[in-house]
Length: 345
Image 1 (cartoon, rainbow, N blue to C red):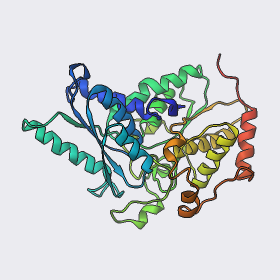
Image 2: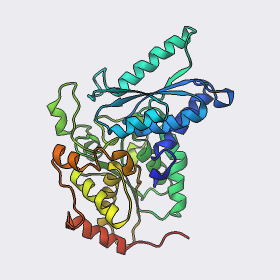
Image 3: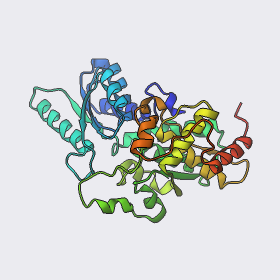
């Protein structure tokens, strides 16, 4: 339940490691010396929120470049945390106006001012390529899962945004037990499924854009990608399989969890849990599968939990309380619930 972290997601871990490393390497002034640096990041929202909270405690200014396909709730929250927010049109990473590229350019310009003696120390936190992201999960999340399950798990199932979580956790767990399966969950439009299954980071949706244009193929925010990041590369060899999850499956699962478990999850969590159920359904009774509830629904009120958006803009079905949506999936969840292993004492 990484959504229970102070920043609401597992991104708190990566954000802390990124900032602490920059301070240790003297690329940012240390908080014990008063802080006062500038952190720039291109983010779909969650990492920015985690960085904003940490920057407040360490007296750094945060500048966030946000793509325009994210929920307005995230931009509002970032501003309330004191971040300077710039929203740009989403596009392919090859476009210089991609939000990550704009953030990198902004940090470079501010660093140039500092070098000329009239600016503050500035870093581009670079969550996709910064290996501190991977290390955060290799050093903390992975060991926590191993210890909390007492080493008794058969599969770890997780989606990938930056790739830090699945790579860091996957590397750590497979070092403890090579028989543990690490399975990637991928949404529509992302090429990572094909990278894991066939060794090629390509998906048919990309053929529509020889162009510097972004696909709006999934309602999931912050997961799925059309490139392999450095953080994913660090653990790619540990990922043994991948599953593709459709938007409707995520919507159905989110509503099922709310009605049956009282869990109000976001789109990424719903995708992860659909993937975990699918992996579990292929295992023998008594096997243990771990996934991450990485976001809650409170940041998705204008999109994922908005009936007008789901039905009107995405053309999906809004599950009703009394409707038996995706009965096959629901029955499978019920079966797995009945096979639950008692929690560790």
